[in-house]
Length: 63
Image 1 (cartoon, rainbow, N blue to C red):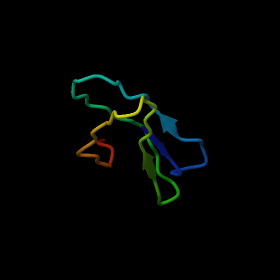
Image 2 (cartoon, one colour):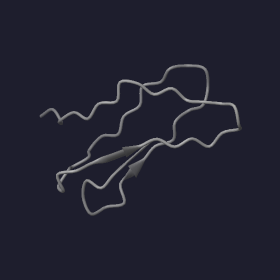
Image 3 (cartoon, rainbow, N blue to C red):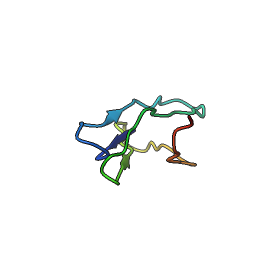
Image 4 (cartoon, rainbow, N blue to C red):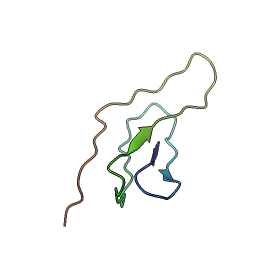
């Protein structure tokens, strides 16, 4: 999972675990200064496999 285009940095990326278990993942400390944010998911896997992603949220930081 990658988030970028929110400031002048290259963004942040985390690797998703490929197994048969649901995982909660998050990227924190994203300071949006451009008014935009891109979120992308990429998968490097053998043919015939898939990944299911749901409930993607962008939320303001809590103080």
